[in-house]
Image 1 (cartoon, one colour):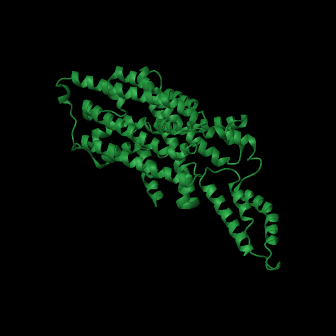
Image 2 (cartoon, one colour):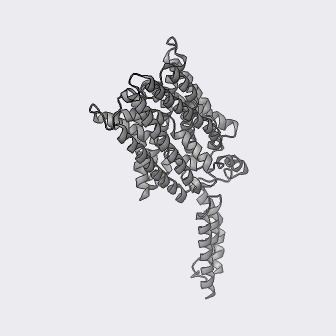
Image 3 (cartoon, one colour):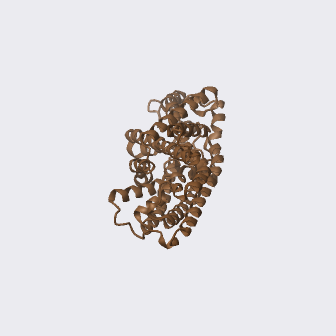
Length: 450
């Protein structure tokens, strides 16, 4: 009876240790605590006549060996758990829900909002509004599901880790490749937008577009250097003000221009439903451009990995989702109503030569800040995957910074090459949306739900 009671007590210790582990953030030594608690629970030693002290001593004696083997198996070493590493990791857990919202805004609200009026011109006013609002609520829900996966599996730090839960190693490799290619393509689209902006602002045909592409890539490289998202969030406030001002200038300028034209606003050739000339290809491309605008779930795991209170992510996705729906719907509907079927993509080009130069100048911060955060995310993913046990990945030593600089430079160079190879804004957005965003924003979260 005494042995049975003792075993029950030991089993309760195991349960308490396990509950403590799953109800808190992962920390070093949690599995070791569970193993030490379980060392007291063992079947009676047949050779010892049922004396429980014998097997407990045996298990306690081999506990150290098993812990060492498990540590080696899990890729944990004592040096990695040292004070320097812990000190370096502290800066990667300073993100609250407000800064998370800012990071999501930086990642989501940029190029997408500039392509919405062009999508309305193809789809018509009513389908455009329905898609902006409907896809917005779908994106909020799928991001909620994405966050729930992170809450139940705290080790998930990037999208590839989440896909591994449902598809194993194959899913991890596939999603990792998609994740990296997608973010590099996004950076490339910002190189292209930066090139268009510089050409429009300077208005000097003597300077080759290739030169402006190089200048844009260099700026994206510099802005992407902050390694933590808490530090990057500071730039996010500038980014948000920049895009709001650029959109307001575009809306006001196109409205004034339409009002001064012969016939006024009533002469604008916008339509409630898709124009008869709209083809399936055009409609599908425009729909993917709206989907592109709601792609904030892609980097959500990467951002949440730095949160000090991950459960607050729900506040962030609701705040972001409602802000996006408001901006996209108003921008698309108003600019389309003021310009009509001749609206250009990005929409800043429709504001007239002088105003578009001013708007592009104000939009420069959002072009480069929103583009560079994608380089930061993919850089962190590659670094954590390539050097999971190294102090270099924490980027707080000379070797770490040199590695980080080389990695961001390589990512930016590849993005620049893509921008030069696909020099068409809407076409590049359509390729990105069709290949990746639909999966990251809609397909994978639906699978996570199960």
